[in-house]
Length: 214
Image (cartoon, rainbow, N blue to C red; front, top):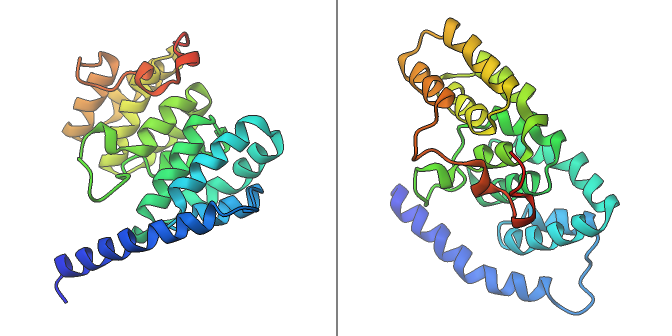
């Protein structure tokens, strides 16, 4: 079977299965415990709905938030392509809830696309967005990848630091500018120190009540 045929078959299966899965999920008496919702987060058929429910639950229940802090890092280290949607939902939860425990796996996947079917722009960089939302607590993890990662990881780590924009970030970027040899990465570092107009801005990624933050 050709790759395009396999992809079309997979998308058709998702389209047909999702309504049934969501009906089962929303049935009366459905378990809204963090454990059950986290299992559903890892199923592509119910992942989007489970992510919404987990977000609401974690905002009101510290135990649910702690459960995510304990379990999201392992999910975000998953390399499987079949988990694109699941991974993107995990990254969104980590960023929106500012789960600092997820900083390292997010930084390790800073070059990862959130979906194979979306644009290749900033909006499809779930780890970039999540790290920017977490902000300063994520800086040590991002700095490590800027130093030791591959070319794309170093490029997008520089972007994250440039958008967070604290004095510590600028110090790290200037140090990287002195040691970096790859021209593409150097270009990103220079832009990070003086972000262009078309770069992401932290205010894009913060909820309304958080936009007063730097």
